[in-house]
Length: 371
Image (cartoon, rainbow, N blue to C red; front, side):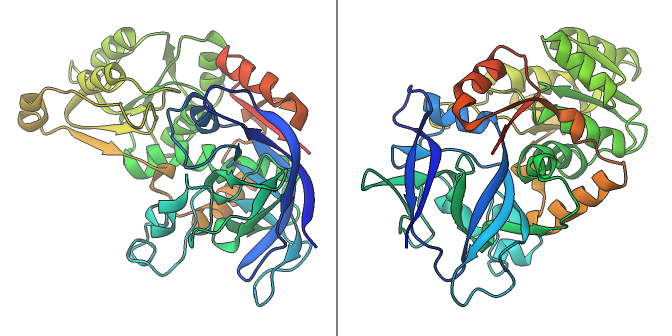
């Protein structure tokens, strides 16, 4: 018997989110149905709206940062049972490919179908009015109930609040890992985080955990700068020129050891400013996304070579979701990682466009849909 539910779909590029009735197939082997508790509202879903991230099919069911309770388990699917609490990972991990076997689950070969809207074998699981619709990252957390492959599901302890746990499925791991894994921050270093949203605020937390002496947050929105200082930033500025000047003033003119670029819509000048602010042999971590088909980065080749600077891309903060999601939640329970403070406002599913409007106006660090 197919699963009847409601969810938010993007009908076409430039449209608004529409909450509609959706029909899912029952979970098949290797799949589970999940009754959603909460979903974070990440900027990446807005990129689907603008077309910066092109997807293979519209309408497209959004959402890739969520948590809930397993409501059905596909046949011959060991390891899961009804009632399990789970966090969705927007990056699936097969555990078998070269990348998973090398401890790089974030680069699993299954990621090739994240924007196809289908399973890895090309089959679709959801329909609206009898027509196939795509699932964001194969999970579509903007649904009251969703069906996904177990490669994208991580079981978590039942005493962890799922409305906070949902955040580690994308934003927290991406930001925290950008600092800890990709920037490889060391104690005493000076770090600039450019863009304090749902990703950047967690890069601040990661820099603090790594022992950085100077953690410089950059954002034009005062509320975001204040939040960054509450969660670990030692200084904050509304522009990169001032942040760069300060970083040089506390490093004998050398500049930041690393700059983490977590702007909502990546532009060429963001990477250029970060490159300028970084010392010799320093690292620029590029985590933000712009238009995937058009974004390019221009930097001085001589400075790249002669100053031995490094530009490092970072997807999900170079984290391993099946290892790091439980680990981050352990840190949360131990008081080492802040999650409650990240949620600026909660919304119902029907308020999704209101939530994204608040993101664009700079009102939210992270909006969360509650089911």
